[in-house]
Amino acid sequence: MSETFLVTLQPGGETFSAAPDQTLLLAGLAAGVKLPWSCRAGTCRSCISRVVEGRIEHRIPWPGLSAEEKADGFVLPCVAEARSDVTITCGA
Image 1: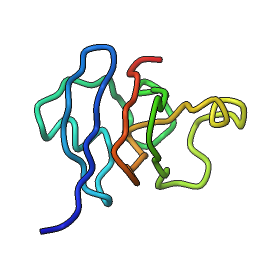
Image 2: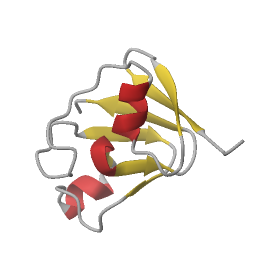
Image 3: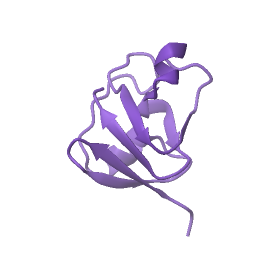
């Protein structure tokens, strides 16, 4: 069985599993979790969230985030994949 990571959403505490090659958005939607989204390409920023704990990696080299936002822990779940168990605050 392939490795999966536990994703926890704040403030509600919902959890779901994400495979390393699956975006956080698609993993959440597949698990029945309602998440904000629109473009699924890292440009509209509808899904912007903040990593509270854990590691992610964006699928694209420069998603629609400024360098400052990335340094502050902001991510776009539509193009972000878990690299460990992760906790995020949605709609940050």
